[in-house]
Amino acid sequence: MFMLSNFLLAIARLLNFILSAYIWIVIGRAVISWVNADPYNPIVRFLVQATEPLLARIRRVLPVMGGLDLSPMVLILAVVFLQSFLVPTLQQLAMTLR
Image (cartoon, rainbow, N blue to C red; front, side, top):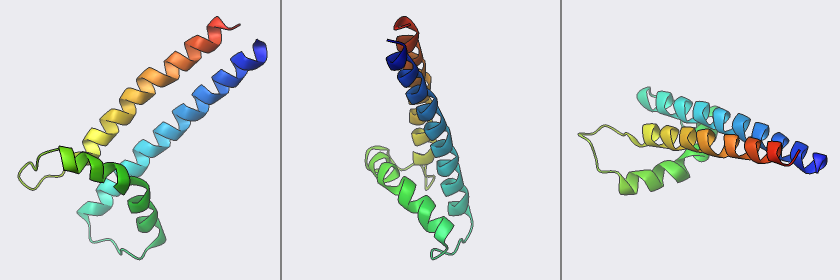
């Protein structure tokens, strides 16, 4: 049981790190959309490729707000929700297995 508990704790920590990193990736994508970034820059391409699939889905559902793209904010809120729900749930599950 200790191994499963430790495994779930490790998954919770890794998931927390990945979700935190993704928030920063979305923020970076939003910042580069404000400036005239070179679309052939490898960093810009990574940010676009890492975020566009989710942002495009949100844009299809979210109405246009006077030319303001709120999809990055909605995505960040969704990631924060997942971070606030999944990580503590996994941690509590791991603690009950000890």
